[in-house]
Image (tube, rainbow over all chains, first blue to last red; front, top):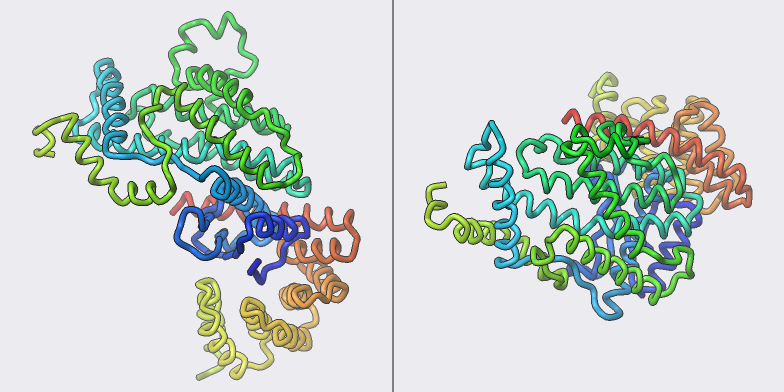
Length: 332
Length: 152
């Protein structure tokens, strides 16, 4: 471990355990402009000789420790997979981008047909790949979040209050995301995105356990669904709203999560245990993709494939647009 | 350079520290201290930069200079606590961090250092209280930073 910053005993032990299990080195780095949730630059994804955990310079105490715990747990999952049967992430190709964007386009057309105020064509075209990438980003991250958090909760008691604060903050931010695009993007995608985060928060509220994490308490738009009677729920007044639909889909996703995340969270730390967590995450990702009928949108590939795909993103987008719109796209 | 330039030098040095350019910061702190050796803030801030550079003994000496000028300089006590912790001097580090939190109850870093020193000296229950206080202050700071981020 390379750091000159003060750390609590459990965190120091956890970093040492990570280094020992993976036979690697972890470096901690403070950066003023770092993302609030921290960033992990790991040797399994990037061409590096050591792993680097970056966190905001303003995090000086337990907030910093929680970021380290979270990123170290993720590192263990990645490392155990890499040293076992292989570490893969969801990536994309020209074909898979076309499949996803085409589906978004067809759904957008259905939505647009019902709208009084139509979306300008240029905006609609731009939205296709933005939405595709948003789902790629979310599905590549979301399933690991409950896994990492449940593990930390059971292994590092000292961080529970910090964890609760961070999860509340993250939950609020995730639910606020896309709000400014609510009227632009097809309803189906707004609902599915919200449902994923709603299900995650409900799962964590049950697993951690903390009532404070309940989306129906913290998310203003969800509040009205708390203690709603069945009769009332069945009236069109509710069923036509995006937030009610998010609740319905979210409840279904919660069932999927609970089924796949039947894990002993307090087990001893071994490579086998963390490799199993990786497999659990992969299965959960696949199940959520199947539920959202997005199975063909992405492919499991090594992390380097994804880095290369990200560099080609603009090319893939252009090729997909060409396939969808033909020569019309030349004018855009 | 006149003494009136010292606040400007300290401000520029602090900006360098935020950019993790410690050498550049140190040069400005040296200049400020030469101009105004009785400025406790200058000594204390230089100590902070030296801690980042892992020059702990020098940092402790700078804190002591600041405390000679102003024995109630909360930040100097806080930095001294951190530097002492880094060299494994947990008992004096705890005393310094405690003094820092007494003088400034809103210093999240000092509460955190107090917590880890208490933990190192086997006083876990008291450590929990110090950590809780540190977290409370860190959260307030984080909410403020979050608002700034949104505003930007």
